[in-house]
Amino acid sequence: MNAPLPPLDTDSLRAAAARLPALPSVAVELITSLDAEEADAESLAEIISRDQTLVARLLRIANSSFYGMPGRIHSIRDAIMLIGLRGVRSLAIAASLSGAQPRECPGLSLQHFWRHSTATAIAAQELARRNQLPADLAFLASLLHDIGKIGLPDTLLARSVTDMNGEDTHLYRKHPVTGEQALMALEDLHGAAKLVRGHHERFDGKGFPDGLLGEFIPIGARILSVANDFDSLQIGTIAPRRMSAEAATRLIVDYSGKRYDPDVVEAFLAVTSAVEAPASNTEERALNVDMLEPGMVLTRDLMSRQGYLMLAADFTLTRGIIRQIADYAEAENLPQLQVFVRIPR
Image (cartoon, rainbow, N blue to C red; front, side, top):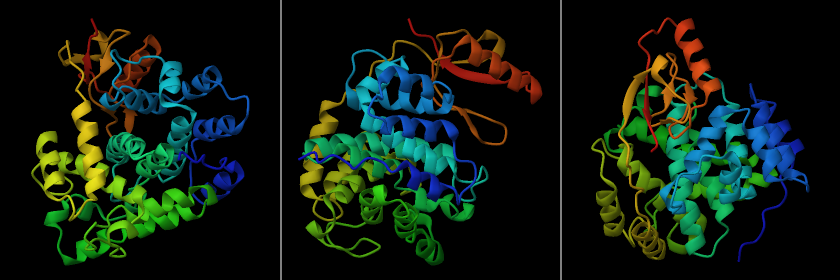
């Protein structure tokens, strides 16, 4: 059932991205290497190591509880072996397309985009496997499902969906189509584009943009809908009051057959019941830069003063990275900069 995706047409990716500024060179080199027959984990790890943000995203995915690993993954190579070349390929594509946007993106925090998209992608990938569907397509579409929000007004996206007024809702409901159109420029992303368009459809036909009913909604979009809402309910983008994972699960069950495909909900329950949050034997500490040591692991994203993501949570510090953080703190005159870490035992 896992039909392989066609090889990525790198020339098409570059051509489409040429219309946008600042395409990340590491992501493009990674995609090019992944298209080569001789691609291997060692060479890919070397490329990825040049982009610390990409490293952090890769390790965050590998250390997700959905993979059920007994210990933490710290090696780029081990993360690649766990996620697979297709997963790394999807991550590189998403990094290229989102990273090609202007550094100032009205209406969307790229930090939030990546955190939510990654959480959604991990869940959707596992749901697709449970339904014997191409997990790599679900993973890729999930990483890109909110790309249509780039450019929406800040005031709109600062509100939860339930707090939006009529005009806000009208604009918000355009983002699945805008996202589809952004991806249709690349032939290899047409499959993902269809899922992006359909991820706000409802099983009872009351969704948007097309009001599709039941099995007329692509199964990948039905999966993406559950995965997306499970995280959105917890981070407060659907309603202002954030829910616990347990409460979000109960709501999804309550809307089975209405908003969500009952078969997908059944698979979702099987997945969430099999996932146990990894036990934490260390406490979070807020340390000044001069107290950081190699081996410490970030517990929160490290953001610049301008709001850009410097390092993502779960990144393991090295001497070189600590030196870069110290240089940044000195350049920005932030002598009391604190970094949130845990110290593995």
